[in-house]
Image (tube, rainbow, N blue to C red; front, side):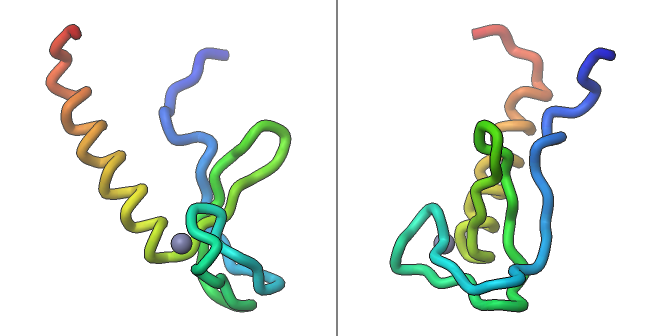
Length: 72
Ligand SMILES: [Zn+2]
């Protein structure tokens, strides 16, 4: 089956245990915080809300540019 979404590999969930953000070791994701989950090989990378918003905003900009369908 052909892929019909570019963002199949991303989810939002709630941290069951606290851990460091995988984009910045100084950021802490506390138990109960919402976090962004991104498929990373066989597992998932988890990002704090602050990093998640940056990643999502950057990708929205990328998708908006792609939508113009201008070949490189
Ligand atoms: Zn972070």
